[in-house]
Length: 181
Image (cartoon, rainbow, N blue to C red; front, side):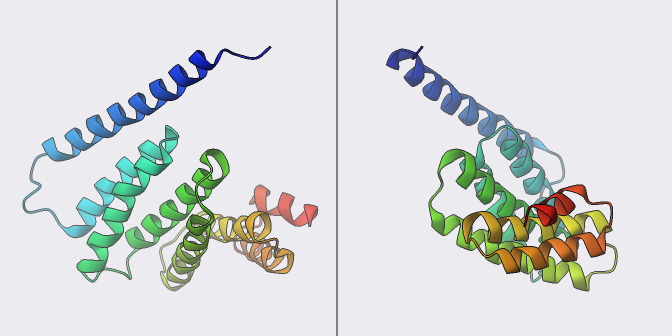
């Protein structure tokens, strides 16, 4: 049974209005927080990261990219590209662009940019000392998924999945992808 076109348009409009409402509420809560004037760039970027992740969780991928890109730009301008939060922001941007391509037909240019972002995040995380193994494995896994699913580069994907399993032997998604290749 096919739904009437009217229902489909209503659902799309309702979903867009919901995303706009969520963006407005999250932005308002971000602006209303105390002590914004003397906050560090890492603190503001952390807040923007939380907003972006909350929007991405609600499948508002395009809207989520705004605070995430703002956080990355803020850290760039402050010269804080070698911090853990910068790696987290880059990985969140890559994940959001990938999910947007899968679920909302983002243009392929987003995937090319997502690959660069996740590779930069992985290199940065390799250099940092306090990164949990599972987070590093997650970055390698995402890079492998992008290679496998969007660029059809099985050898490079296999290498990324191997790195993920080497870093965290209990990381099941990477093991599953390795067995599929």
